[in-house]
Amino acid sequence: MDTTKNLPSFSEAVYRLGVMMLTLCQGLHSMPVPTDVPMCTASDTAQYSLTFTGKWTQAAFPKQYPVYRPPAQWSNLIGVTHSSDFHMWQRNEFASNGVREFAERGEAWTLMKEVETAGERIQSVYGILSAPAVVGGTGQMSTEFEVFARHSYLSFIVRIVPSPDWFVGVDSVDLCDGDHWKDNVSLELFPYDAGTDSGFTFSSPNFETIPQDKVTQITSSVPSHPANSFFYPRLKHLPPIAKVTLTKIKKTNQIISLPVEPTQSNQLPTGNEIEDKLINTPLDCEVSVWSPWGLCKGKCGDSGVQHRTRYVLMHPANNGAACPLLEEERKCFQDNCL
Image (cartoon, rainbow, N blue to C red):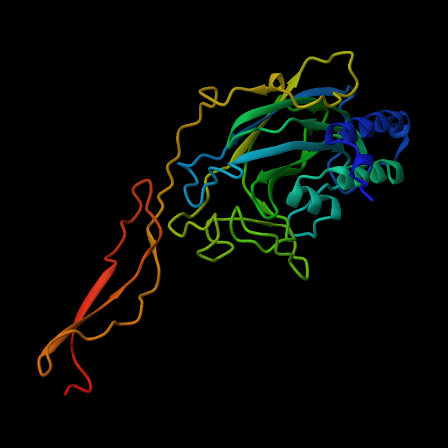
């Protein structure tokens, strides 16, 4: 029996949860505030605009850059505003089932239910936000959201497409600074591994990680395997693959910015509006191991020549190290010469 018809779309799931959160928010101010974190004493609510900018270019990340089936792109953004006792995801902690499904397949329903449960059980979540996908490695998506003193934190997640279980995002960014709200926050984003799939490359087939690992940041040397799509041993640090800008805006009559259907009008163009300087990451040539030496060729009784070869695994880019010789020869003497 096909049950997929009963599952709501991404935007429907976010919309339903947004309406539910509006209902829950009526009694939030009476909840106790944790005493082990800085207390926000801002008296008014604050509304922010969020702009996510993809910086995933072939120049910055030339190794195995996805150009088709599917090309490099970003999933929908899904986020929450919350108190200090809630985490959508955390570095060096195990990903929830909802984060797993979103990081691996871009499916948000389980993650939405986890947020709903947190809102109902401990009233840690104030609101949700979403933004439409970016069809390309570069480009922007935007949305708006609201925070207040008890729930001054923002977390979100965006899936890297294609990838085994890789994503970018922020965990618990506090927008409050004592008795006032921060005007601007800009953060560079780097890739994370959800710890649920053991694939090394963007297009790796599904390979479940058993037992599950913790969420870890992917760097130029971790995982330390030459097949990894982000492995650049010449770099100390990966360049940022995306960034997010949070800007405080004038308040409106809207309580929470509910998501809308992803349409072309929701997306900014993917061209010159991204003003960051172009990053060219050098990619060194990679070659296979040598083949065994071939047969010794020559006249009987005289020295001969034998050859061995290797082939290119990865062509160089952006002034990376050139490929070494792919064929080698040496003198030899024939065995069993008659």
